[in-house]
Length: 501
Image (cartoon, rainbow, N blue to C red; front, top):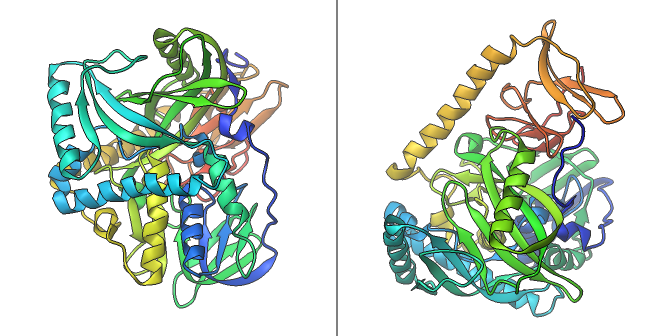
């Protein structure tokens, strides 16, 4: 079948417009006040806040910092997270809903304040969540009322600006957008020194809680009083986060248009969302369009997802060309609020930040501040809303049961059906899962005709992986682990590679 005919170049705009980092890997053992595992927005925000509070830190990143999920965002810096506040207020009560609202609004202002001294293309814009239909209109009015009660800058608007066609929208004033890598690389640059470090190409393999804690890596160990696990999905999962959040993939195109730039950031809520935001540099103007979300490993052809997104972009804009395409993965909690705080009651001095639900620019920034306050012993005024030990509200319990039932169904169904498939020849660019004697094999033939054969059994909980034809990866349809064609882990919760066959 060969290379899919896809729009744009397979690259993140944020990665393409910044230099590659070159922090040294860990070499031996070090001692710091706090070890931060993960070099995305949550980890680097936490490290910056901790260092500002006088703590020494070591950021440990398996790859290069700000090259994972944070480098694949649309980079909206907004407290408007779809139509969430009416539900959160109903399920959590006004006090915890207000904490969530205040945390994210404070995160907008934190980024704006730091951006004053950084060249990160920060810009203030209104944010719109829009809908169509009479029933949705009622929901928008409820959302505006709930958001206002929580102190957010919400208003009900019927005259929604181009490029969207909408009956009405929730508008939040004075939100923001930025270049996430320029912002975070500037923060990271000033971390090393005076007992603090940034270590790249250093994979954490184990975390020992206690007094002190110890982070084992493939290059040595980091001993610390406290540990922050900010690895998108936690590399250590003692509290079963995989069963309390589900993974979703979504897609982004950076397009050049013949239209005026949008005068705001736009988000259509629903099962298949659509996102729009402008991005301007000194030399070029782009519009970033996102959408086509689906549960990881269950979306059918991912190449077709890009094609659908391009068609939707052309429905809204006079598209001159598609410059870049990229995809991302987010974890969504059953109640749509992240887990930020102690990783488990029995794992002292180890903290987690996960489940940002696609809104990591503000949730990740807020998580950094929350965890720094908790570690400093002052406590955070937002802790109750983000408490990882909370029970899901009754309204969210059904969603939690549905997602776990879905994972169980995929596990049983795939083992029952895929094992009956017989091996067939593969054309270059094709892949399949087959039974080979007593093994179940995920096989890909590359464009040169070379075969890549690995176990098809996910190393997390033994589900069978699915082929992702756009990214050329093996994705687990149960809990979202992803692997490259040679079995290397790309996304957790799996920590081990797929064995070669």
